[in-house]
Length: 143
Length: 143
DNA sequence: ATTAGCTGTAATTTTATTATTAACAGCTAC
DNA sequence: GTAGCTGTTAATAATAAAATTACAGCTAAT
Image 1: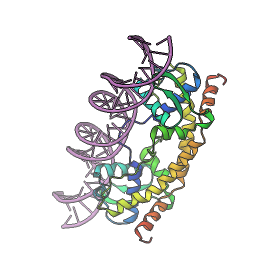
Image 2 (image 1 turned 90 degrees about the vertical axis):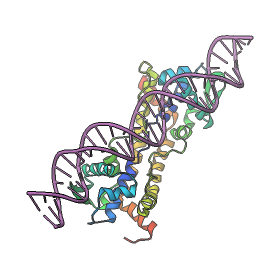
Image 3 (image 1 turned 45 degrees about the vertical axis):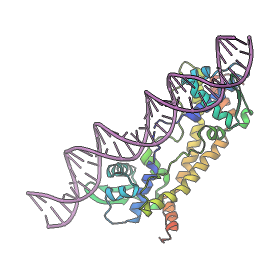
Image 4 (image 1 turned 180 degrees about the vertical axis):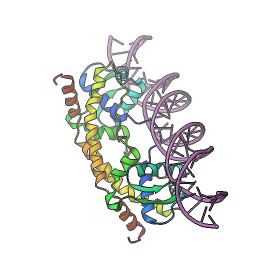
């Protein structure tokens, strides 16, 4: 498959909103920056809204962050745009008649959960503000 | 795309070898358990061999672990079968004329690296023995 | 020596998941 | 009232994975 860039694009959208507070910000403008199409941006924004991260109104091109950047973590964005999709995937297609194979995958699941948790814990400690600060340092622009 | 199950299948192969020490173990037999085809198993085994995790000889269906199960970590298997493929993917397709977008992705990279590192650190602390023990507990069989 | 059976590897096809696109109903604000 | 936007759905294209095919070369048994 294609690699999912939803988390990256979700953050992209949020930072874009942070950089343009109160300004008119259409899905077309954001799409131009991500180099995707407006409908995809609107789909992402719909998920971000459902996740409680942004507020936006149909017909009105002025979306706003629903929380301060310090309160939005990378994990929040991940959950909003990827849902429960894990980073690692068990092979759920093993031969069901082979108990060995089935139990290996069950055994693995426990350890995949640990990997997932450590990744998520790290994501929970990264906020939109951190990423924005890093962006500002990069561009020399001050907050 | 399809989700990659290479790590799961790599572990599957290693545990299978651990369970059948010294026995004849053809790629056909392993493929039957994973419910895949022998050529894919051989491709995975080729990678595991390059990663220094197993020994096997062309024409001879008796692969062996190159290290003890305590010395093989989940990270070793991940590196062997996935190489440098990260868990999270930046959107490298943003509009190059939009400096904002480009720099957002650069900023994000630093944080993705942190997430990757925490996942890898966890993987480094999980050994094939851990997974095998969990498997044995599950099946009631003792080591 | 011959040969059956296996491995190692490359090339092609199929499949799964994603982004892309098109389309349109409904809201907003001028 | 209408231009421009959002929200949503459905269909299509793109991409990376597994599945498959094929075959040269090794092993070991006879």
